[in-house]
Length: 157
Image 1 (cartoon, rainbow, N blue to C red):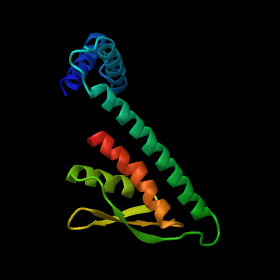
Image 2: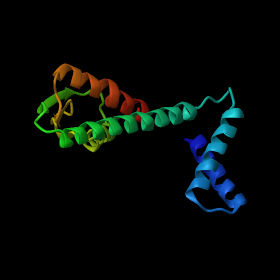
Image 3: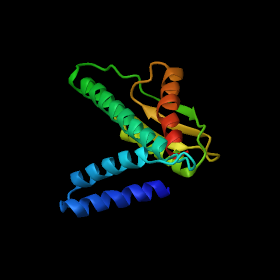
Image 4: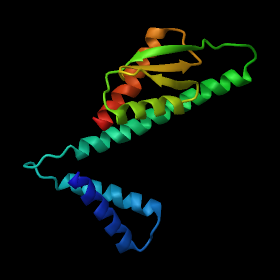
């Protein structure tokens, strides 16, 4: 956590030194500070910060890919004549435990077109999801667990 705060401080310092108070300049400063901190990191005090940043970046790309894929599939359904959906509700067993992880997973599923989180069981072990395309329940469950849930666990765990 202290490495992240140092990274933010260095990024703000970059913005101050350059005199351009813009989001893009802050982002550039953040990246430069990250690289600098990575180069001078101490072997005696290992930090998970560098691993977490890579996981967050990977997560952003994963979710972006899933979002584009789902948007294209739903758009194709709209412009194509006929009914090609296999809608249904699936109970997905959860490995994640905390409220933050469950909330993030539920929101990511709901943000993805064609899927909607309906409810979480009272014991917080099952997530109920409605989806437009459920050709194979096991495959759908696996894609949620190995895709979204695994990455939420990596980022928040």
